[in-house]
Length: 164
Image (cartoon, rainbow, N blue to C red; front, side, top):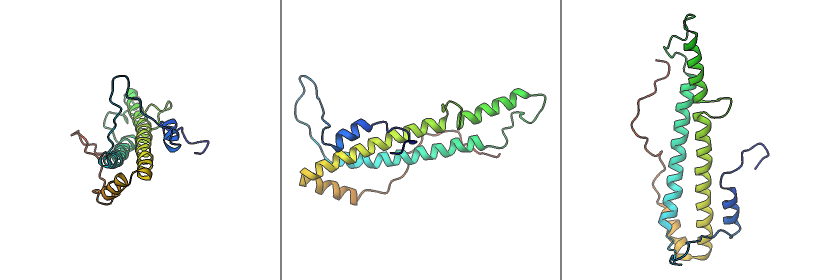
């Protein structure tokens, strides 16, 4: 990781998993038996990829909002200076606000978290594959036949049509 890149949200967990020190405490009264199956690991890795694609799609929408030329709020009317102020606020809330509290930046934080969750599951699955032939065979079989990754579906919303 370079000095300029932001810290990974789950760096400590990733380090523990890579070094084989990650453990699970089930708490008092819990069964000590943990069942691990390859399907869950494959689904998590695949669904994280779909979620990352969705986040990128949402970021493109935020960019479209920030780059929109015409807002039709009266921003070009010199008698309505508040309209231009509102448009400026809308643009900065979509992307590149001074305090990084904008949709694009927050989605980037979510992307990094999902990326770390995905990597954590890959690392854990790899460690299981090194010690469990049955798990390794099933995991590799599922990964080879996994359906192509598509963005997770977004809920219905009003379409954003820049430039109209």
